[in-house]
Length: 222
Image (cartoon, rainbow, N blue to C red; front, side, top):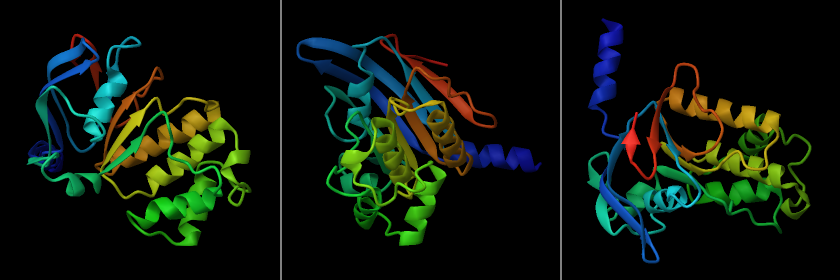
């Protein structure tokens, strides 16, 4: 009975709903009439060849670009009409991490969290410890490696208190340990009814997590 109730609650939640999305870059159509949904507790792994439109789609879903046609709804409301409310629900990690090189790891996360959910210094230090940056907290980010900068961005995402993570090739520049740390963070987020939408060449089929796949440009979801 408990399992049935959980399934009913899961189905009742609205999450992210994308309808009839069409995107062009220049004069080339990347994808058209694309519809899918991501519910709490789910991962959507977007796949496709280079140039298929994976990054373009994530930028649309993050509100950084507009589609030719289509709508993006979250919990039943139009994300374009209720932009500020949607922004509070998403964390976006693109190719550019948004890390300020002149700031330390702690200062970057503190600045990031101030406009979302303010965090104590101890919470920030704990998050950096979790992502493997113990001892690097006060180091300026221009002195960190590419993989370490990405770990700073991961700590920011973990502390964002957002429900939907939109991640564009999040494992780039990470070593094996870094990838494992990121996968563990994704699993914890999804296990707490969070949602993750990502592009990656890594396997993200995690235990006790529902992973769906969207193949571009065919738009077949499995």
